[in-house]
Structure formats: C-alpha cells, structure tokens
Length: 160
Image (tube, rainbow, N blue to C red; front, side):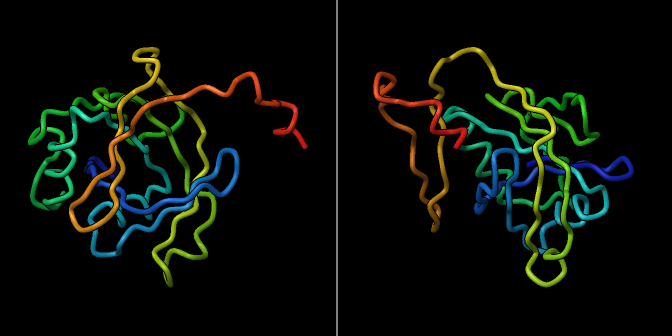
C-alpha cells in the first residue's frame, strides 16, 4: 500500500484486508505504522499487487519504517501518478488500485479503514500473475495452478 501527505510518501505491506463490496475494501492499519497517519490525513492510498519476483523487496518494505527510510529509493520502486488520487502507484507491481477513504468511523477505535476503489490499473501480461499472500509468522502462500470452469460459470448470477 502506498500513500502520501504533504510531500511525504510511504509504502507499507498489508497483512489484513477484506472485500466489503464490489469496489470496497476494509483494511487494518496499525496506528504505530507510519502509513496510518498519512492515509488518515490524506484520506487516500493505493493498493499495489506485487508478483513473486518482488517477494524479498516486499518483506524488506515491511521490515523498516517510512519515518526513517524512503522506501521507493531503498527498494528501487518507481512512483507513478494515478488518475484519481495523489498517492503514488508502484510501477513494478502487476496491479494498482487507487482508493479513497470513504468512512472514518472505525479508524480511531479499531484502526480499520474503509476504502473505495476509484481507479484500477492492471497489466495485460502475464495473463495469470504469480502473486503471494501473507499467512503470518513470516510465511507466505504462493499462487498456484489456474483451472477454468468458464463453461459452468453463470455471469447472470452476479447481477442477482
């Protein structure tokens, strides 16, 4: 997740999030995390989806503080401008989701941010990116084999 406020930028690794609707995401951001304040003040951020080749850099991002380190420079990431928010996208990531904080009621008590995706950027290649997901205690799950059930899929069920 990347953020900015008054010329200061940060990148953080996100360990916990949940879909709350088609274009809404809820996420926990610890109040001791530097990004917490930047996102709370700016009311926006970008969720950036890295692939497996960025796993070690992503762990490095999570192991240092944006108060002490410029993570874009330290880890060789390229900040790109978005279309709807000022928070930087990370060019090296497979997908970037520009988000705005749309509900602040749960931030003070629970450090829980409710975001709406206002723009999405997804690479056209590879068709099935190899991503990773944090499972806790320094362990990650790597995306695996893809199988199709397109013949069984009923898109009209999404509308009801």
